[in-house]
Amino acid sequence: MTYCGRFAPSPTGLLHFGSLVAAVGSWLCARHAGGRWLLRVEDIDPPREVAGSAQAILDALPAFGLVADAPALFQSQRQAAYDVAFDRLRAADLAFPCWCSRAQLAAEGGLHRGRCIALPDPDRPPAWRMRVPDGTIAFDDALQGPQRQVLRDEAGDFVIRRVEGYYAYQLACVVDDAFQGITEVVRGTDLLDSTPRQILLQRCLGYPTPAYRHLPLALDGQGHKLSKSGQAHPVDPGDPLPALRRALAFLDVQTAAGADSPAALLQAALERFDPARLPRLAARTL
Ligand code: GLU
Image (cartoon, rainbow, N blue to C red):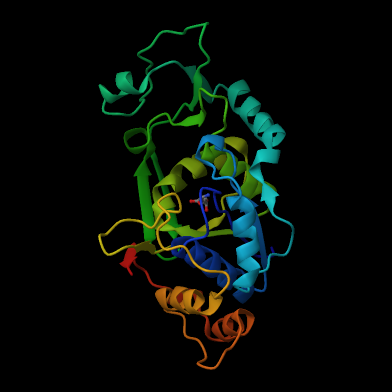
């Protein structure tokens, strides 16, 4: 099977250093494997979206030498595919409607575990949750090692479709990773604990489970994740080399000293790149 990787930014702000690391890491793994590298704009959360940021991210990537093999897939245009997956889960009784409020769930430790507190309310739309079975979901992360999660205790019956009618990230991500034929997911460790939920969804929908490689998360001096919404550490596509060098150094990837363009720098990095030597750390401070 041909390797296929992806970078899947949410358009919640400009490209920042943490997302550049994920983009560069996933690009290197795909190119090293002689595979494809795809883009996906995760614009399924309109309230969190920052106008213009999807285009700004898509415009910035080629400035950093990161060119995808196909036009980006936009999740805002994938409603019909999510509807099909959602209908299958409902038909198989793997998803159920839930009217519980956050406050009601807080009293239960914040998780929904098999039992609704609120009664059905025909006057209000419900959220839809996965009926999470007992048992452990285990997978081997290529960098972070063996992972196990008792989904019921750590995620509970998680939401796949919100009260507002938007599909949740977990469902959209799984449907699109399958649709795009992704064979390995390379992303930050902030999503490591989402992976068992995604594996459950893949199993319920009959999709293959890709390999996973979670890169260390970039933290600022205070130990906080860099976030696009916080506008921390945006990278400047007008002057790409310094940030690209820092992203490669963050991933312990050697480069040539003299490279004078992003494409040349990435090519030099690729020649020395070994995915097995990426840092096996959960996080790294800048
Ligand atoms: N859209 C997510 C983010 O920007 C990443 C999703 C993924 O890589 O699975 O944090």
